[in-house]
Amino acid sequence: QVQLVESGGGLVQPGGSLRLSCAASGSISMINVMGWYRQAPGRERELVAAHTRTGSTNYADSVKGRFTISRDNAKNTVSLQMDSLKSEDPAVYYCNVVGIWNDDRGFDPRGYWGQGTQVTVSS
View (cartoon, rainbow, N blue to C red):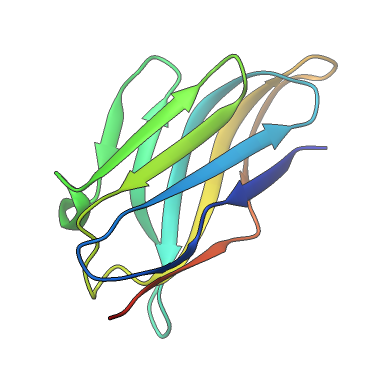
C-alpha cells in the first residue's frame, strides 16, 4: 500500500519562504509523476507543480518564478521550495503521485494523495 507523508507547512510572513517535503513508501521501484496541489477554502483543488521521472516540470502560472519543485528518485521524495510567498498562496497543500512501479505488483497507474499540510501567509 502506498503512503505519502508530508511535512514543512506552517505560518510565514508575506515575502517569506517555506519548503514542503513528501516521502512515498510502499515497495516502490519508481514513480512516474510526483507533484503538489493546493486547495484554499471555497476553491477547487489546483495543480501547483509537477515533476516527471524523466525530469520535466510543470508549474501553475501563479507560482512560476517563485516555487521550485524537485525530486529524489532514489528516495521517492518530492519537495516544493516556496519563495516570495503571497497572500494568495495560503491553502492546504497536497502531495500527489501518479503511476507507480511496484516491486511486487508491477505497474500501478493510479494516483495517490498525501494527507495535506497547511500553509498560512500572514503578517
